[in-house]
Image (cartoon, rainbow, N blue to C red; front, side, top):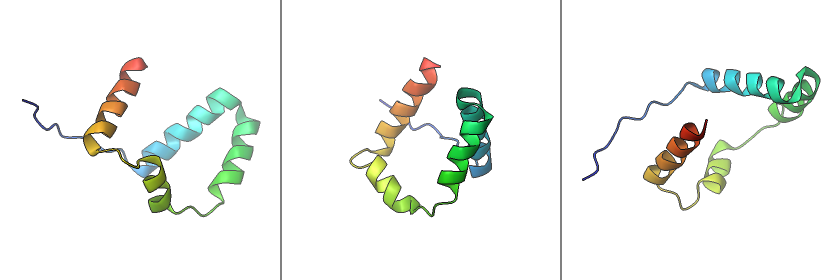
Amino acid sequence: MLTAKKMIVPSSEEVRSEAVQTLIKRMGITKAAIFIRENMAQKMDYLKVKDELFVGKSAAKLYEDIKKVKSEK
């Protein structure tokens, strides 16, 4: 029998900080700055993007996907 586990959701600031650090590390400061300028300035409808990214996936499936990615690191 599966039991529900409490999932900890990181803050938006924490996610943004990690994303910027990752971009700089992988792309270098110049390319990261260009990417951030081009993408952060655009208005995004999160609900629309969320629906497109997670269509047909349950919370349990998303949790399993996250666990898999974390275990690969």
